[in-house]
Length: 392
Ligand SMILES: Cc1ncc(COP(=O)(O)O)c(C=O)c1O
Image (cartoon, rainbow, N blue to C red):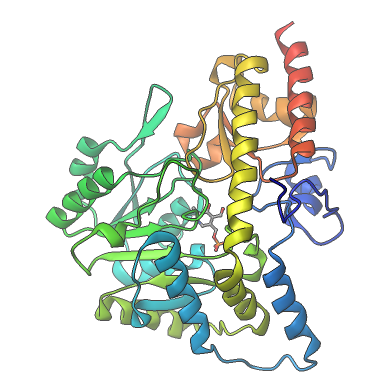
């Protein structure tokens, strides 16, 4: 069936101050790479979002603004409709970005030198949210078993007795896991036993591939305390540059603690553009997202098959969520610097080095496939050619 939205359209992003495209020289040392690194998409945002922004920009005054109630309603309806999760109006705290939310939660609920658990390989700001704020980092590495990453609950149990907080990535970037209800329940029971606060970063919750179904940690918990959830329309609708997200904090004192951190920073969030984009995305983005997920799933399946058939000895498992492929390059026999140089200079493809996600990412590279299939195909062909020379 013909789609309403054309994800095959190649849109030139160069010279738009795009980090992904216009920072290539400083990030990779060369502008001549197909950029498949930072996690945004090379697709136009949904028409509803673009129209809302155009309409707002047509009003010629961009003054101090105020959040309308409708923005909260749009978020509540979205999570009800898409995830069967009932969020109460009072639980919502708007926040600039999810990384800011992680930092705010660490500041609000831990003291200097308290221990915070992370589960590497993991999105690198999880480390900085702990290290830069002078907290102590405890690694509870995921275990790779038969191509699938799992939580090491036994090890977590030993970490939990010394820690105040766990930063959970759910779904997980970079490994693409969607934690199942049983896994989340096990996590909750360890957290309850040790009075651990869980900050659940659910920014990728909407980017989950059927038949897998996402479960929010808070939704399956019987308790309304000690779970801080970060959500955003930014990854879902390709508006991360607009910087507006939300925290869901059911417990009033915990909500106040986060609000106090924001108050101390005098953060003014009410940007007239980000608020209309946020609301329109959650109100009108369903069909666009359904089609995007179909497109990404086709691309994901193709890429995984292609890797199996053509990119030996590189291996990859299909992510259950996210548009990020975690390439296992350990059998290429290269150290991490040589591996990065291989992709950048030999293949001409700009990927994220696995090592930024922690030591457990050594020998891996992360590839962002949220681009028209022609771009992804071009990148795969470049890697194929470079690999032929490498293995000769
Ligand atoms: C797990 C995760 N959290 C947070 C972010 C960034 O969120 P924000 O741009 O809202 O700070 C990303 C972006 O890649 C991510 O993958």
